[in-house]
Amino acid sequence: MAVLEKLRKRGAGPAGTRDRCVADLVAALGAERVHNDGAARLLASTDASIFEGGVAGPVCFPDSTAQVQACVRIASAHHRPVVARGAGSGLTGAAAPLGEPVVVATTRMNRILEVDGANRVAWVQPGVINLDLSNHLSPMGLHFAPDPSSQPVCTIGGNVANNSGGPHCLALGVTSAHVLAIEVVLSDGRVVMLGGLDAEPSGYDLRGAFVGGEGMLGIATRVAVRLTPNPAAVRTLLLSFSDVESAAATVGAIIAAGLVPAALEMMDQQCVEAVEDFCHAGYPRDAAAVLLVEVDGMPGGVEAQAAKVEEIGRGHGAGIRVAADEQERQLLWKGRKSAFGAIARIKPDYYLHDTVVPRGRLVEVLQRIYEIVDRHGLLVLNVFHAGDGNLHPIIAYDSREEGMSEKVREAGREIISVSMEVGGVLSGEHGIGVEKRDFMPLMFSNTDLDHQARLKSAFDPVCMMNPGKVLPSPHSCADISELSRASGDVWG
Image 1: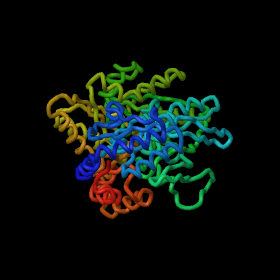
Image 2 (image 1 turned 90 degrees about the vertical axis):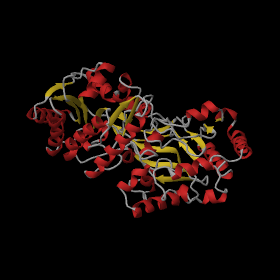
Image 3 (image 1 turned 120 degrees about the vertical axis):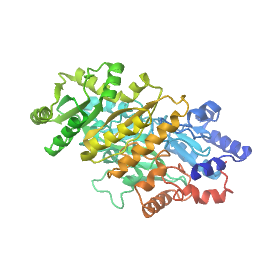
Image 4 (image 1 turned 135 degrees about the horizontal axis):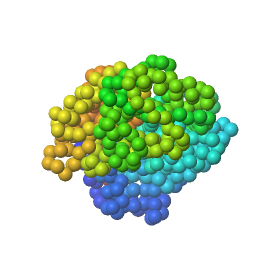
């Protein structure tokens, strides 16, 4: 908590200084693009996580690279940190502002600038919504492969910041595999291009360093994304099991057979029941677990792969349903992607992590997760990317119940510890943010963390961009920032 406390103190600067910063922002962007009222700042003070310690300063809505530059330069002149914000759908507090920073909301930078179908590249602004991009590309027979469950609302800039994944990233990879170049505004206001459209851009892969940087390295203002052809044929299968062990064993058997499906998702019974109540997708309520398996490609290959999945599933006692048409396929996927929303029918709040564990330890970790939540008297629903072991245990609860939030956080800590014990990692796609920041030493040595801090410093030597995230004290630049020394340990 040391980093957070320092940032809170720095945010309590003199009111006159804060007012001058707002006045300069208004002069540069116009009053309609700078919101400093309580409602706007409150809405920008949190994301979709359970972190509640964010406090926003003025919220800016630029619509061009030049306006983002202006925001950054003005913030720097007034010794204010900057936090970039997209749709606010993140789940780790990465977009929650610490210390009343200038918030740069990129939601108005929502234009698809150029589509090169021949070379399968599109240039987009960071506020473009993920699903809107694929819908725009559909008539061309193309799509943007990363498809988080928040696809209807999350933005490309947020996907880049968190290196987001999704159900269909098993075969094709997460966001970093689909970003070719990024135009970035650095903390000194310079605009740089990371990566490029050449097959082998020269120099270090700074594009790769930036993707997943959680806004700590700069602000993306244009992104060149790789486009993927729509498959010629798709087959979607729903496999149901009488026990979780058989479902997990089937996952391993499918991969061991040399198949890499387009998607391989798993839900336990609690989650299936919630999904059915929510969208009536036709999932079997009596199944202890289900697998949603999708294969795609050329028709002959798809038929062969689907037949192999059926054979493996039956060998593990699965009941099998094959989507008869596109409408049924979309309904099955609506069930899977609505899982988080379906929780609201059970409890008003939820908390989840996205640790990744070896596929061979899935059953063991799931059993231990059930034991943890039972011991704390909580309810968990499991839905996850089974193909790569990316878990999403959803703890459903009511934060209004006395002591409930503390129980949930403790259970979350134990789930992370179990995942680390079996050789897992902290995040598969949601990022680290604030919520998992202090768990980083479970995965990285002091030397590792020091080098990560050095990387941030190379991009942002004054600790201006989204300080206090990812790196725990004393490795966080918020502990040693040149900016804090220059401003008398007060941002404001």
